[in-house]
Length: 264
Length: 234
Image 1: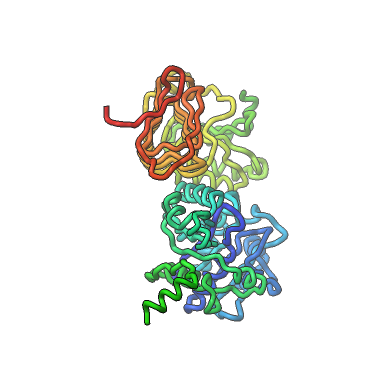
Image 2: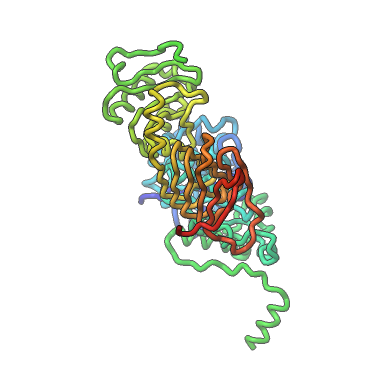
């Protein structure tokens, strides 16, 4: 096995990086892939909470890098998926506790055993970001349909190009289709026109995301929610499957009546 | 400016010199292959790692052309040794461009008089800088001569030229032509909607954008005012 190292980053904070990592990881594990997530947000760790694993942390990534434990000891197995692991960040240190070459070494050690290594980058473009993209084979940028988030995404794309990484992919999170239709929100086409980065996922705004995050049960585990389906589609696209983008339009009652009228 | 020579290793002093300047530690190189020089720099820093820890380096590579991968490696290796690469100085436009794309400074606040200014500066200014990519937010390109860009200048990017600026693409960011006060220069683009545009001392902002207004335009100074006109074959 030779794992793909996938880094999820954004520039701006609060756009949904950690949620994206948790959901893609769960979706990939659900498809039978061996997955390990690494929380790169040292000092402000979150991924453990979203995955519902915070009470099982013994060792963290800084312990591994500084030689206080072996990688295996820091890996927390998700009981829902026997092939999904988390290497948590340290909460009591800062980003400088780990260097880009530490991250490359760590990932190289894990590559042989996994299909996917997913790194949750912190917000910003400083050390934590550099640590997270250093080992990346594939980089995914998460952004929201807001000018400030798109501007930060553009900055990050520029930095990734300067590092001579492969062109990144884009996930557009928190689309509210009724606002787009009113012309009050940037559309997918608008964001693509600004960034010119290949879109690999479009995730609609979904209240269930917050509920799921609080419960520590990523949406992609359950079958129903629209954003859960969107994340599962992203996981399939990352594995090279062609999956059409889901229809975002929220049907009004009138549309539904029309369809019934036409259909029958 | 240079107050003290901090470190000289007799064996390697001809390859790498490190001196204290106001902005940090200035690194200069002798004549050798870049790989040899950079390795020599790493080994010198490594030997006195405790001393160099947390230092800010200003690295002067002379006229060597370094790609952004090489500058990035230099930055990362030094970071591993606990040293911050702050500034890369060079007379090569390629190196300056690489460093700028990585977000490193390429000049000191007060320039060190490293070269007889006339020749080097005039030489750089006489060449146009050719950039065949989109400049994204945070990219800053500064060049003494004309700048030609095959790509867009996105919102948040900055292009500052001593001469004219020509963009085969869309301009949404900041563009400044004639930075030294040359008024006989122009800015032209296929779609010109900069956040702010300057020629010499004059400043303009774009009118609010309406749909379907993408047309090639050229801005020049006419009678002391910035004037935009359609950019057409003459």
